[in-house]
Amino acid sequence: MPLRLIFMGTPDFALPTLVEIVGRGHEVVAVYTRAPKPGGRRGLELQPTPIEREARRFGLDVLTPATLRTAEAAAAFRAHGADAAVVVAYGLILPPEILAAVPLGCFNLHASLLPRWRGAAPINRAIMAGDHETGVMVMKMDEGLDTGPIAMAERVPIGQDMTAGELHDVLSSLGADLMVRALGGIERGALTLTPQPADGVTYAAKIDKAETGIDWTRPWQAVHDHCRGLAPFPGAFFEVEGSSAKVRVKILRTTRGEGSGPPGAVLDERLTIACGEGAVRVLELQRAGAKPMKAEEFLRGARLGPGARVR
Image (tube, rainbow, N blue to C red; front, side, top):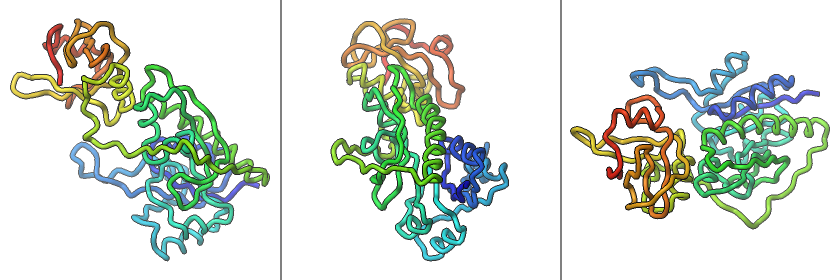
């Protein structure tokens, strides 16, 4: 029989899972997501989350509590009469009362190979660390931070030039399929849970804006991993001298470059920039307030030839 489910999610990453669950005939009795935030051109209109927009398209009930840490929130959660909850990048901590409010438990889709990269930014951190492989896992949640037993997993190679945005899309799609397979196992009473190993634990802290500046004194591989791990958002940046002030430029795509020189020096007319060891070639970028563009287009309007320096 299809399950009665509560779905909890917020960003685009969670969309394929919600769509797949509904498409497989499970009854989604409530959708929990974060409250709308100001947005739009002037930042005045309240913008619903991607999950709220999709849930309303399906005609599902949407709730946006500011906290789940109240007796009222737990009572409301139990009142849905759900068998289980599916959690995908929701953004609020689930307290013990919520975890215990559904008989089969709460199942989280996490974008790493746990116990590596527990926490908020596993996709970015895996690339920034130079990992060659990552994946998605379905985990039965407990009170710890991504510490629950694993139900299912899929591994994904990380290409040499793959960006966080590209990996995000691969894992989002793969994770949706993984979650519905796990739900099928729950339906059949055949889902096996395996405790996470004690070794290999790392934490994926939320990306801080202070991390987004590029340190050109690092080796090219570290600079390359930093740039692609933050692309397209929030984006690693460098600064160049403009006509009246410094201009901030966000890098969207890089690859290994040829040559060497003082860190931050532009080496050629293809926007190859020297690092502490080796160089990276910038392929795509975005000037503050402008649209993303190829490096060739950017260079037509910028005085950034060989011998120039970026910071």
